[in-house]
Length: 460
Image 1 (cartoon, rainbow, N blue to C red):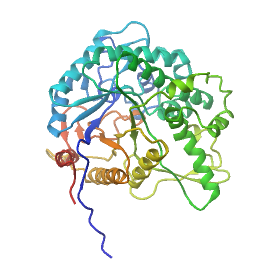
Image 2: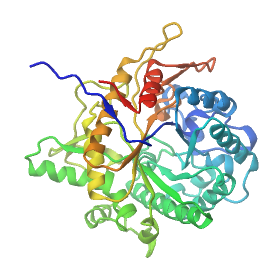
Image 3: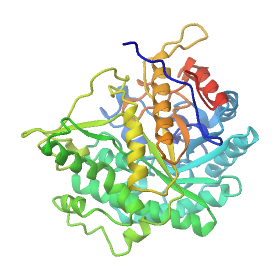
Image 4: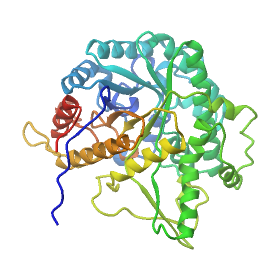
């Protein structure tokens, strides 16, 4: 039987198309205009933590080249651009006096975007915590969440007249578990109790930050998470289903339930209590965290398959207490990160969130893939990325067809950039960056995405 060719699809009128980046990954200018050090400046200088000792000191030099980059966004037809603000540019010490030169950069960037007809979507925190706050405990310290609210107020005060959409945090799972649990991200700590304290204080920062934004007049406030599509190796195995329940609790429900249901799930708190006495959780915190959310950003890259296996080491510090669970290695075509390519996981994840947490508009705020792209003359062919994006856009469209309130899709990423612990070794961009010359070359995927935006859909 012949495979049926994919059908043409069209997205709803007003569907938002865009791209996303993060400050430390693209800006460079690490010491310009009063910027203070972040935990990633420190971590990337720690031997053995980042591939080849790479740092974000220069990155894509977006701080100085933003006008050209915005012109490229406009050429590609982007309707929106999600970027993060670098907290160390605004408050080098993490609290106290605001650095006006740091705010000036984002002021110029927003004006440039609006002048090109591109709607700015601001993420206030994408992992670059000011180092002085980490020196006082970082996200294990409740004061960091309180300082975040002051930082949010300062940024809003400068940009509120031109920015409509605000998100507080990007992927608190990564900040907590990778930063404080298994240590593969900054600040590089390996302590499950610290990881769970960080989970709570990140969520509290969201809640306090959202309150501060709304008090100042914001009307569209959300958060971006990276929920996992957790799948049992054997759907008929009760043990595998229990494994899914535990992993889902640590990855998804520990964030989504307090954000969207007003409280932590009891089974997750029982599990966390194995590692900490929960003294960081105070009366009223869950009410703060569970305040209104106007949008929920979903970052999706690959599914997670698990099985109950006696003696399996579990998910190390990224999933504390999962001994006896095997996280299955990916199969089939993989990205350059070694991640499984399974678009149907996006459909299932969006459906699950829409069903279990109804009433909140969803955005795909990151989706993309790293491949070892090589320029060929003036072109950068990347057919694997085009195939990846096509499949995931079809999966997103299928979720909409099934009733999910999905409002937009932002590709990760606009530019090749500093890919955290992988340094500059992995390329996620739809635009190729030569890091020596800083030359930008739109890949074939950029031109393909340009046509997707123009058609508001996919050809058959």
